[in-house]
Each structure stands twice: as structure tokens, then as C-alpha cells.
Amino acid sequence: MQTPWEAPPVESPVSVLAVPKPPRRRLGAVLATAVLFMGAAPASAKEQVLGSAGSAPRLEAVAMPCEQGQRALRVRGGEAKRTATLSAPYDALTCDVAKATEGGWDWGGGEESTSWNLRVRAVALPGGPTALLVTHQAGFEHVHRQHALFVADATGARRAWEGREGMGPSSSSVEVQDGRLLFSRTLDLGGGEQADGWALFELRWDAERKKVVERPAEAWAVILRTADTVSEARAAEPPLEAACQGTPLLTVDTNDFRRLTRDKWAVASLHPSRQGAEAVLERLRTCAPGAYLRRVQ
Image 1: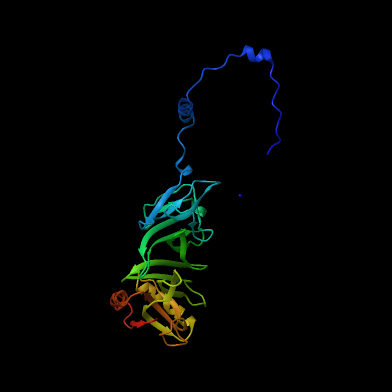
Image 2 (image 1 turned 120 degrees about the vertical axis):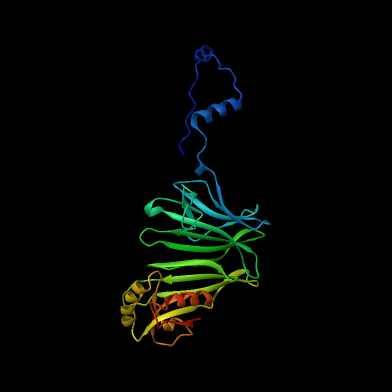
């Protein structure tokens, strides 16, 4: 991830004298002729900067030159040699890196089972340095995202945090809201005897450990219905979704949220801010008159 040396042929003195020496040509002329004959090197043969953050040193996310059908994804800091990257398989891209045109992504590539998208953002860590946030989305049957924060130090770039979203029909995001850097994870099973999942964390810089840590973040829920069993809650979810079109709903276990009543199941819409939850509650009053607001963590 040699071949035996051959003895040089014995040259005949007659043949050497009989063949005239070709005229000397300048090296530049030879190279120019080769370029005209072969064409310019393809873009995938060169590294490509995908995004940056900071200035001294500057952090850069780079797609390395194409080798064996892939381009390694690396983050480097200034001129230092040490680089960092995401965990496999999110540490590589297909060779056809191109600007994305939709979905809020910066870059994309691949086809069907190999398709991927990438977003690169500079974020200011509260109480810490400027970091480079890289989100890589890939997958075929289930599309998943991997997020990582990179910071620069004296030896180069290093990964200060990485967020995974898990298996199955899950999703995740990292966003800045009200000065907080928030990482959310959602598991939406869409039915069955298992509850859906939702979690929200605030990402903060730990100055002592020089790394980013996760802490449960304040979150709010608009609760449309509560039930004693998951089956009852699941039965209530489809009619509510039909009536309240455009509002994603989850059936959650209240034991997953420390501020909710224990041993219940709820059909709810969950939000990282009270203001956002209040706006949704106001909109849902026509389709779910009994909906109410609760802080969940």
C-alpha cells in the first residue's frame, strides 16, 4: 500500500560508427514537446485546498493528489509537517472533487454508492482558539455524517474532537446558536416498539486538557402527546404528523431526559433554544391544541 539486473548488450564498433549522433536539444525544448504530446497534468494529480481557518498558523483542509482512485483528506497547520484527519472511512475522498451546488455543502464527488459531501468551516471555540470544523457526509443505503474540530499547535494540526452519529436512520449536525457550539444527534426509526432518540451537547474548549469536551446542553421540547406505553405513543404519532405537516416529530422515552416525568413516552418536537421551541408551539396550536412546552435538559 524488482526485476533482476540485465547485462548491457555488447556494442559493435561498426554499428557505433555507422549511426550518426542526433543533434543536441535543449532540455526545455524536450519538456515542452512532452507536455504538448501528453497534455497538462489532470487536476486530481495536484493537492486541492478545500477550506481554511485562522492566520498564524493557518489551518487548511486539503484533498491530497489522487492515488489508486482516492484522495486522502488531511488538515495541516502552517508549514509544520504533522497533519490530522477524520477517522476512517471519512479520511478519504474520491478523485473527482468538485464544488457543491446545493444542500449547503462546499464540495462533493463520487457516484451512487461512493457519493460524498464535505463542508469546511472556521469556528471560534468559546474560551479557546479558532478551529476548523469539517463535516463529511457519505453512505449509500444509510447516509451518515462525521464531524471533527481541528486546532493548530507547535507541531502542526491535531484533531481536538470528533462526533459520530451512530448506525441506522440517524442524522446529526454541528451549529453555532446564541454563541454556543452545539452538536445534535437524532435517531428517527419512524415506527416500531423502540423509541426514537435525540441528544444535544455543547462543545467547549478545555484549556487544561487542550481539547474540546461535550456537555449536555439546554434543550426544549414541544410535547404533543404523552402515553404510558411506546405502542400508544407510536399510534398517536402518524395522525399528529399528518395534521401538523412540515413538523418532524419523534416518539421519545422520557427517561432519556432528566427534566421530564419518568416512565412515560412522548410524541414531541425537540429544539436547542426556548425561542425556537416557542415559535413551533405557536404554529402547532391549530393542529395540536393540547401541545405544551417543557425544558428537557
